[in-house]
Image (cartoon, rainbow, N blue to C red; front, side):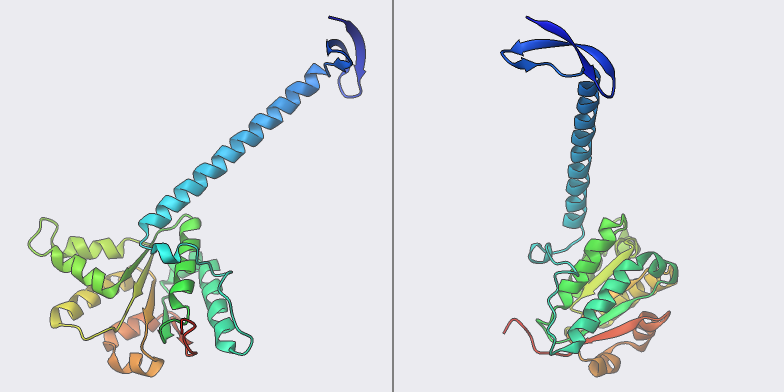
Length: 244
């Protein structure tokens, strides 16, 4: 093996070795730096993959249905002919971007309107951003929430423990709000959850197929007032379904 002295502009002289015909080893100090950079880049790749995997697991536990896992605020398509779509998207983006402030005030929001207008898309997009920011979110229908609480009757944790499940997340997304009539027990449970979150400044995002007028007329005034307190807005989704 041949050796000769060569000069590195950065690190000075070094002994180069001929490993193959016409192929010489480079500066060992440069190679060490390159190896360190490669290891750092590899470690960063592993870190990002671990963070992505952890995020996906948290999203999986959030109740976001597989159909809506790829729904993001930015990929919610709006039509130039329907100004309300852009306003709804902007409201969702503002809510998610300022969620730290939302947590200080407990400001809730209501998405009201027809099926197939993108309420779930934007709601799941908000929940995803909340989770990505290190907070917790739970997406559930009102019916499933009520069944969960009622199934706890007679159990060790009792109703209070079951209600606590829905008070704990930083953001609670309640879908199918106002779908069907509620029994006295159902109404009491729903108020218990809403009131417990309200008292703790824990925001809620409510999705309803009712119009704004029907929501006002058919929702318990105590619940409605708590959702609107602190600047809570009702966002109308009053265009035709794009599922049709």
